[in-house]
Length: 242
Image (cartoon, helix red, strand yellow):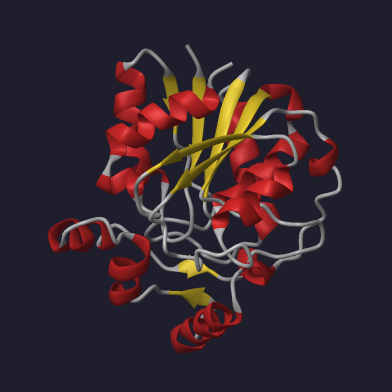
């Protein structure tokens, strides 16, 4: 059995994993789903990427978790890479779930196409407080495109504004790319957040940056933890196995 630590993406908090965690635990695994600093409702959003990373490191260390399978979804990919640098001896495998795999010196923002960069910048200007609030239309059509309207609405209600600073911080990832930790990339084939192309897409663009990695695929959107949590949990087990 494995110990999974699931790190959410932008606009989410740890509760996004509840249905996935329930299935993993029903299968006999231990599962933890921390909330990244600055994420969730009614919290201080004035955080940078280093503080986001440190919050996950602190969570893992405080619970004395070892031999873990650490998964990052979307923005969470940039978090788990830096967590791996900080506590490599506690991690058995990394799983990137439709997640950003940044080149050394890049930010998350650098890795979305220009039209999305412009949209995100506009969302920040509209918020007037260095946060991004995702429009429902974007959520429904691009992020959770495999769900009906009711699920799209109920899941959207769980979101909260995303701090922008962690998206624009440039990351030194030289140490990450020297780590021998095994890696998996879990790709949802209907994920339409990034254009499905070799120039901008999740796979193979992001995944191939990992070098040697295990590829696992499944049908589903970017938000498959809501639309098919049981199917996702089963694929996480495959991606995380020895």
